[in-house]
Structures are given as C-alpha cells and as structure tokens.
Picture 1 (cartoon, rainbow over the protein chains, first blue to last red):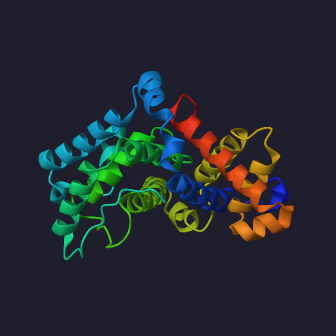
Picture 2 (tube, chains in turn blue, purple):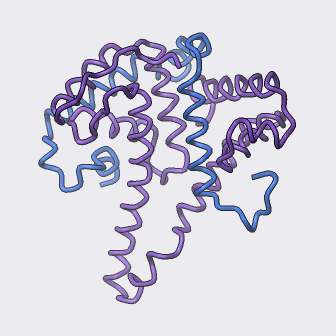
Length: 84
Length: 192
C-alpha cells in the first residue's frame, strides 16, 4: 500500500492477500511464540483456550439442537442468528 | 509448522470427516486453541459490522462438525479451519450483496441489473479500514510494513527481500516481530 498510488489501490485484493500471508505467519508461529499469551488471553479478556473450547462445545451443541437440513441457508447460522 | 499432529485418514464421506474433526478438535493443545483464536481474529478483519471473530469461528466449526465442509486428508486441522473461515468471510459479503440487490429490486427493477458489476462500496470501505488497521499495528516498524506491503501485493518472500534489499536475517527477524505483534494484539489486549 505504501509504495503505490492510492488511485491504483484495490483494498479488497490487498486485504485478501494480506490476510492470506498473515494467516501463514500465524500457522507457522512456533509454540514458544504463542505460549506467553496463554495466561494473558485468559486473564485480560477471559478468552483463553477455555473460551475456544466453549465455542467448540457451542458449535457442537447447536448442531444437535438445529439439524443442518433445517437451515434455509446453512452457511450463515451464527451470522443469521445474531442479526435477525 | 507446529500444528496438531493429528491427521485424518481418508475421509470417505461427510460423517467420516465430521467425526475426524470432532476428535481432532478435542485433541487440540491449549497452544493450538489460542492459535485458532488468533486466526479467527485475523480473519474477522474486513467483515461487515456486527460479525465478530467468534461468529466466524463458530460458523467454521459448525460447518466442519456437520460435515458440510469436509476435511481433506493430509491437511492440518488449523489450515483447514483457516480456509473455511476465509470462504465464510467471502460468503457473508456475497450474501449481504445478494440481499441488498433483492431489496433494491423490490423498489426499482433497474437497480438489480446495474447492481452486480460494480464493486460493493461497503466492502471496499471495510477492506480499506481493515488494511489500515493492520498497518497501524506496525507503526514505527518500517521493515515490517514493507513486508506487509509485499504480502498485500502477493509477492513471494524472495521478491520482498529483493525489492527492499533485506537480508535473510532482517527478513526473518521482521517476520518474528510481525507474528509477535499479531499475537499480542489478537490475544492479549489489542484491537484485532
């Protein structure tokens, strides 16, 4: 972005490529790079590993409660439920 | 890549895939659970207002667990889930656009015919904001911003290094700073 003219800028394409590149960085991060945040994530935001386990449990439970065949648009359960 | 060592066998159908995902999720380490959260926070950049990282992750998990997205053999679980979140992000925008088109068509039949080819202004704005927010994380780190610029342009690591005359050491060091900043911002109090 910094080296190109704003007129030529395509934010959607840039964001897509940037997110792909940064996703690879997170996937490549060594365990010791993530470990320091184990306690911080839980203490500062209450969003540590336990929160992700609860999210996994909720996703599993929502399937039991609402079979996928019952969705008109099976793609967007969370989005639809939050926005309707 | 230090991802979960669990890899599925050859998935024959959706239920096999779903069962394999369920087992692999249960076996994820705390580190990989945090990595998954960081991936969701990153992938939530540029989504419409009101759609958060937990919505995105929940949806990806639900699709993997119900077998509607099948886990390919040999692909690490987190790589698979990151890909599912990526496609869901695109789908959310397509859906919103479709809904906007349908709403417009009820008022003006000509709107629908001209609505599709042009870029979605809301998505463009959200993307611009998201790119700016990511760059802001690296204010003061010119090397990191150059690497981000290269990634955004789809350049390879080699191309980025050559373009900015970066040594392997400088490049790898900046990548570590990028990872650290992303993790700190995503997991310990930042905005992403």
